[in-house]
Amino acid sequence: MSRDEQRKGMGWFKAGLALAIAGTLLSACKHSGAVKPEATSDGRPVISIMAPLHFPHPPLPELVQEIEGLTQTKLDVNWVPDGIYTDKMNTALTTNSLKKATYVKYTDYLLMKNSIRSGAFWDIGPYLSAYPNLSRLNKEILSQTAVDGKIYGLYTERPSSRQGLIIRQDWLDNLKLKAPTTLDELYAVLKAFTFSDPDGDGKDNTIGLTDRNDLVFGAFKTIASYFGAPNNWGIADGKVVPEFETQAYMDAMDYMRKLYVEKEINSDFAVTSKDVQRDKLIRGIAGVYIGSMQDAQRLSDEAQMMNPNAKFTLVNQIKGPTGFHVWSIPNYSALYLFSKKAIRTEAELKQVLQFFDRTMDKDVANLMKYGLEGRHYTMSGGKVLLSEETSKVRANEVNALYALMIADLSNPNVLQVSESESLSKMADSLSLDNETYIIKDPMVGLESKTYDERGVELYKIVSDATYNYMLGKLDKKAYQQEIERWRKNGGDQMIAEYNEAYAASQRK
Image 1 (spheres, rainbow, N blue to C red):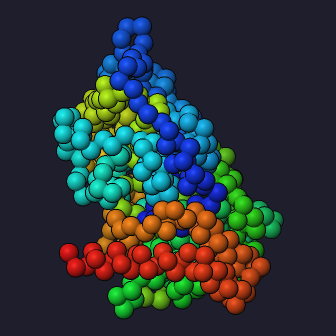
Image 2 (cartoon, one colour; image 1 turned 180 degrees about the horizontal axis):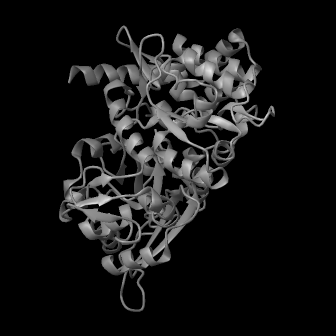
Image 3 (cartoon, rainbow, N blue to C red; image 1 turned 90 degrees about the vertical axis):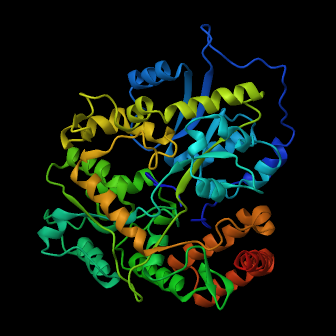
């Protein structure tokens, strides 16, 4: 994801969402054929979009104007900082103030099925064949996104797993350490970064790991997968098992608890935002960041603005008790959904779909991906050259537009890169390497009525228990009592429903 992120197999850990009630609030939304589509004075359709901002600045206004000219539209993009995006989107849902197109992260999408089933969003499946680019979208990915067999979103395409470690290479060099390859070596590096003065200033002012209040895209889920934990759900003897009932999950909690007790992680990680987490790495307070490796180039650029000597490297393979494993998402990290409240007519929906179809054409897609030739990149032999000298300019002026791109990885109109900044190129290579070792969520595409109706409520029990165990507020017995409470309050029913759905899928 980035998002960072970005987004995520089915995540148990997105607390605070009130999306379950959104369907009730939005069920009254109806569309009327008598409403005239919104347009500018010169007849261009207005396309309003809510999208996350993963970078310090929105895109260069001139780039947006160029896209408007090429697509013959007027864009009204509400750029929301990624750290507060889910909350803002949830507020828009509950107040009936969605834009025409809304970016919905994968983990949030899974908790929105009641809103979708209530009729809050357009079923776009019947329309896709009318557009040259949208008609070629990957059918398998579309089926992964389906709700009751219907297609509601245009997907943003992402690698299965971009998870790994971003590490201060200069700190490793100062302490004569090698990049870690095992969980024990990672612990040793985090300890050294905390207690052995890695920055050489003679002060006790560093920690090993910076983390945030996100059990999925923060450090925890990646560390759990290194221990061999399943991805949300596992299968044992043909039966469905929740990840948080496995020994590997417990081992990961013990690992994080040890880091917390020994102060090798920021003590407030359970309430730390992504921006604060990033800032600790950028300012040289912490030496390791576990998350999307695609964030590395931007983190490096910002760190070097404060300390030109800061150098970073990436590690994707950390071996655990059973070798190297890493959790994965389906091949989409988010979807654009189309609100029936904001889009009142079929004609207006077609205008919005036409815009997204047009963004996949060569001229618009490469403008969104790379910016302006000569300013943000150069060409050589028909391929794009991305230099380190222009990386900061791209981050400030272009990269935010990536959130608007759909299905870009398989879009043949997107130009190939011949040369890029070293960390970006390394992140791409290691993400590709992850593909061989990914742990998939076996419940992707399967249904549980209890999860759809009570997933948010039940998730909070597990999330709180996980954090409280890592913070030393619960012992193992108390943690198990919380899991039993999850089971009694609907978890057992959820497991039974998934068992039934999984068995049926195996018979096909």
